[in-house]
Image (tube, chains in turn yellow, red):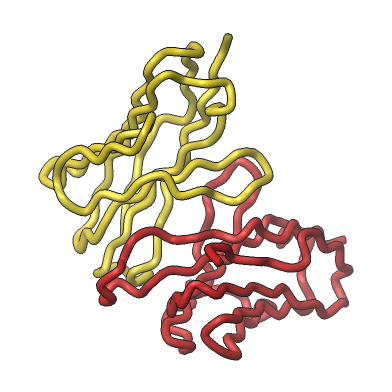
Length: 113
Length: 116
């Protein structure tokens, strides 16, 4: 199975930078995904890491260290609309779920003025 | 077309009813998924279809019955549900990992199901 941990809640100020951490344990790692989900809506794909290092996409960046089982999502120049739940998801080809995504519990981010 | 379309968006059903949730995508994805999400919880995997064949069933009760008529469609048939089955049901699709373009899953907007 998998154990995916991320903080439950975070608060940050508009215009600031926030880093959301995710740690995981898996035997057949095959990629880590970050999704954004606003209340009552579907998750929206943000980023994908399968090799170590930083992936940058506009205001969002995601980092992966496979040896440490660690990833973070970095959000820059925060906007009020960034208030949402951020889901870390891992694909493990050795799990009973095959190559489907398994999600962490999500981090609820509140951006304040 | 880069969307996954789910219908209906909302559904209220009694415990003796039979209903179906529908999901459609035209991105050429050959893997499709059903997830269940309760309020303030992460999505939980229910079923995985790969190349129209059921490859994973995560010990889901038989009152949920999936069907994949073709590579673009995925259904979830519901029968004799319980109030605790009330949740957001999400459909997603992707390229299977062994394909070259393996990048991200696309989710539908979900069906909000209430069982009364």
